[in-house]
Image (cartoon, rainbow over the protein chains, first blue to last red):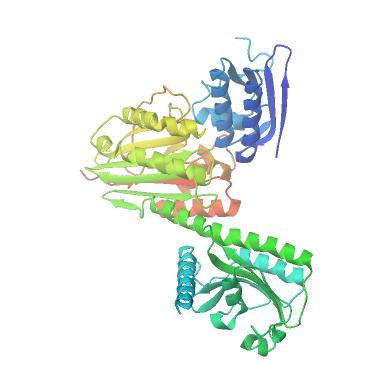
Amino acid sequence: MMELDVRTDERGVGVVVPRGRLNMVSARSLRDALDTLVNDGTHRIVVDLAETTFMDSSGLGALIAGLKTARQAGGDLRIARPTPAVTTVFELTNLDKVLRPRESAEAAFDD
Amino acid sequence: MAVHTDVRSTRTGREERRQRAVEALGLTENVREERFDRITRLARALFDVDASTVTVLDRDRAIYPGAAGYDGTPLPRQETLCDRATSEESLLVVPDATQDPRFDSLDIVTSGVISFYVGAPLRDGAGNVVGVLCAFDSAAKMPSPTQLKAFEDLAVWAQQELVGHAERRGARQVQTSLLPDRPLELDGWDVAGLCLPALAVGGDFYDYGVSHGVLHLGLGDVMGKGTGAALLGAGVRAAIRATHQEVVAGGDLGRSATRVARGLGADLERSGSFATVFEAAVDLCDGTVRSVDAGLGLVLVVRADGSCERQVGRGRPFGVLPDDTWEQQTFHLEPGDRLVVFSDGLLDLVDDQLRWWEPVGAMVGEAADTASLLAHVSALAAAHTALDDVTVLVVHRHAGAQGAA
């Protein structure tokens, strides 16, 4: 089971926090949440993965799709604080350069 | 009597179509299945009756994929009320067959087995009646409208099971036929693989073949699982296969992978998917391996002395960045070495996913040969109920062999 918190902070950055397992079932709702944010005009998004205990290829797919959508809208999608299990997925797929882990959701758009 | 002839030929035509539909769905084997038994148990409880069956009419016999309160022995078709329910093509409710001139002469009625009968036709996608869900009792009964409504809901469920199952099984057979049909036994080498989809079909595949002394192999994993992933996986496999000639002739794998990725880009983009792929060409004379890793990352060489080396790839998956490129890497397999490539479904099954090469390496080290290694993975997947597709490809260069040279 996964819970998903979505908020927009004071700088207008969308912060999405998936809690639990990010798999084929829950990836759908993450994807929808990211789409909704971009469609509603929030083009800079941080996905805070500190409480994501597991991520499979569908979860990764949702992040990549969100990244593409955000960039097409002129923004970006960044990730923060991935757990070791999630970091492994980024490393194996060599996507740790494309989605470089940031130290916090707050600092994710500092550069 | 032209009118009669027309009616009869229409009936004959309908029965022929029906029989063909039954055969097309592969329902002519008299195999009992729990998923049909389950529905019949509910139907039996719903009416509080002696028995319920899912009945399929196969030529002149009635067979029972599911039954509760009946042992499922096939019966002559003409002896059954389901025959009538099939030809009526609508819900048939018989409160008391012993008082119904349509049925009172049937053996099954005169012998006292059936008085009450209710049967709902089950149709395929084209509307052909391919089966019947029925319930019956030795005592006469008048079902309530609520019971009949619930019964029709059960019939819809049975219909989906009957039709969907055949589609899934057919898809699985096709997908299996896209995998190598046997291990390769070569001079000084053996190659084998295993692909276990979590659902009926999946997005994983592996492939291998030899020509001109070069082994060409690949393993791919399309995002997700199930039918969508399988459709894309078949495309990825075909695209990689098309590079076989050039790869075995010495062509650069980085360049061919880049071209494959370009070709697949639009398909992956539109379906919102991506694919991780490992592909290699192994020179069977000297053990040189040229490879390209598109984000798979799960490649291990277990040396003859038992030590493990990860082959860390640098490439990203196909379908992530539109202008991405891939590079060929090179390593060697010495006599006694084993190359093991697998999909992330296997990661789920090992204890330490962060240091996966240790449990996987140990598993390889403990296996006497390739067949027992694959059997071990198979057992692991079954024991843990794999949630994702599990695919493994193994290349073993035999100890003491100097290859085909």
